[in-house]
Amino acid sequence: TSTRVSEIFAAKTSKMSAAIPNLERMYECGDVLANAKGLSYKAHQPEYEEILAGVKGADNCKRLSSQFIARFFALFPDLAEQSIDAILDLCEDGNVDIRKQAIKDLPTLCRDQHSKNLPKIVDVLTQLLQSEDPGEITIIQNSIMTLIRRDTKGAIIGIFSQIHTGEEVVRERALRLIHTKLKTSSSELLDKESQAQVIAEIKKVFASGNVTAEEFPRLMAILQFTFLPKSVAGQLEIANMVMKMADLDADAEFDYNSVELTDRLLQCATHVLPYFSNQVKSTAFCEYLVVKVLPHYYQLPDLTGLDTRNQLCKLTAELAVHIGGLKDPMTAAKNVFDRLIDYMPLPPATE
Image (tube, rainbow, N blue to C red):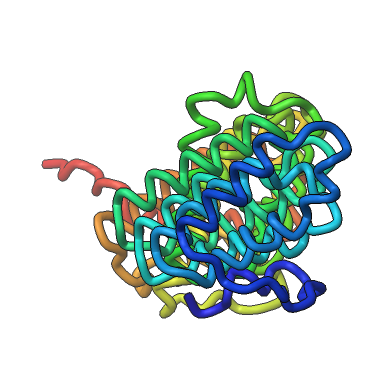
């Protein structure tokens, strides 16, 4: 991985001093801890430290180390950081079976009093989605899902951390994962606090100005699972977010040669359309299309699978339904009239 997953956690840990155990010694340490009672755990910290050192051992020791760390982690809170680092090392191991074991065990490290670790652990798991091994991907998704159910808001913070900063493949897979899971389980997973977190994260993504044509519809679909579209104030907020992303600069000329800008403008218009109403006016968007874009009607670039000019006419007509007072009604009327004349059938020839 380009960024080591362990870097997501602050490097606070000291080097482990225990010798690297063999498999037999690992089982001995596990037996000692399994049979310890009450406060006697503290006396057996050296055995737990040996288990931590097992992540540097042979492959069979590494897998067992992961399982034992998950099992006994909660008993040694003073070694929490070292335990997390040890499992994170295994998440980057060259052996896929060791990685799978560590990924399966990671969710146990953010239970109960360690719940503060959950967003960071989801962040790590999300970063691991760049794997090309289908079996590993399934285990990663299952671990993320376990943590989404345990603390939806914390998991959303972790997943969106990679959507904000991760590599393209991670960002795409993370967005698809959260969209798919919320589509099937939003009512049980999303309380009001979690919905507010989703809204805040999507606003941050939109504000970055770094949203691709593939990501935009998915982000808009995720917003549908929140309370935002259910009120007029929320609809206005969504309309403003999308219009900001469409970059409707009334003082600048529209770059009609740009395929990317034309595509973004039409996509934004299509997705914002349902949020306009008698209370949420489409004036700014409609006026921009009529004043800035319609004059370049015949110069607009062709878009894959879309009739650009036909779509522009259709969207302009639909946006006009909820229009308010225009700043420049004369220019708007002239531009619409000029296009209408192009399409008006000639009067029938009279004898």
